[in-house]
Amino acid sequence: MEVLIIDDHPIQIDGYKSILSLSDLNEFLNITACYNCEEAYKIITTSQNKNRFALAIIDYSIPPYEDQNLFNGQDVARLMQRYFPETKIVIITSHTEAIVLYNILKKVNPHGLLVKSDIDGEELLVAFSEITKGNTYYSESVIKAKKTLISKEELLDTTNRKIIELLAQGIKTKNLPTHLALSQSAIEKRKSTIKDVLGITKGNDEDILREVRKLGLL
Image (cartoon, rainbow, N blue to C red; front, top):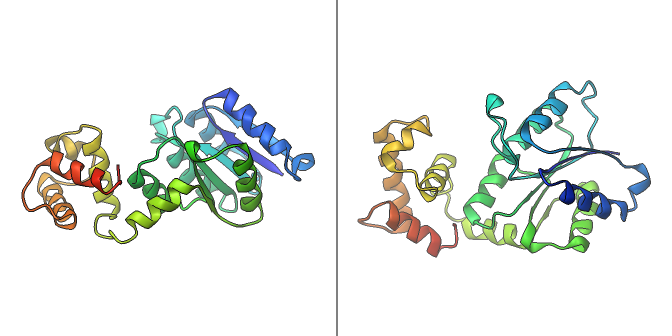
């Protein structure tokens, strides 16, 4: 069983190897490790065997490869899906924000999504076992995020989620067009929709972020 692990911390990779060594699959495992988006891109795109990897464990926060528009583990996971559609993908992240976790679920729909603060070695072993059997496995924060956001469909539009994420990063509304393929007027219309969903009659970007945080989305 070929396994690809992508993480910029060698100690973390060693930890995953140790946990996998405790599984019933250990004697059949062949693990390939890489540490950033660029190394991952080269491994994924140059492999001659399209069925090479049965499992990929990808950390969300890894150094980008901007030349290929790969900025995090989510982007690498989507690349992996194009080249290895049968590979079971597990994304592991430190992010606990509901909107970030839901975004990963919507864009990647991985076989596993685990928040580091949720899990220990024992649960990680259970997760890997379930995923290799063909099941999905989400850690506690992911399950809560999904339940929290599932009823906010208008807010969960991919572009609206991106607008909220950018605002949370401190990007001003006037600068959003440089990050999105939208005009300023289109962005303002989307912000109006977001305010309607959040029940904001009047307010600015800080009001949006405050209400989003109240809902536990950030």
